[in-house]
Length: 127
View 1: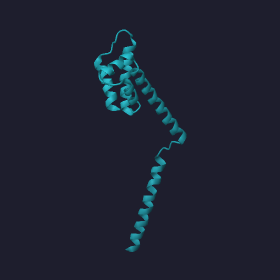
View 2: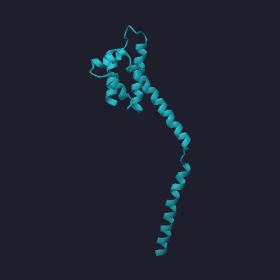
View 3: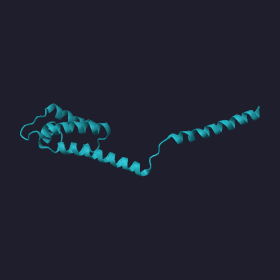
View 4: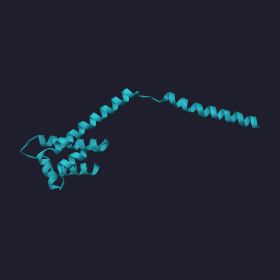
């Protein structure tokens, strides 16, 4: 009976040792250059999104709207640096829409104040 227990124990040990080897053959490994390249690309994309938001916040009419809401546009621009992931993507999309609306004319503001307030609040909340 003891020899059967030993054989079963040895079998279990071998089975457990083989499991990680089976999984290791299925995993995909990125080399350090590929990983570094992916990280650099992601950071460049995030920087471009942040630059778009900062460009919007530099506009005089946006700065004035922020002041009317009791916020400093420069402080909001600093907080843009803390945005990342989905919050950054969402804020950048909204900023691009506002920027497109404002580019139409320098003398007429086509953007609604509600949209501008939503963008400013989104930056404040998510940052």
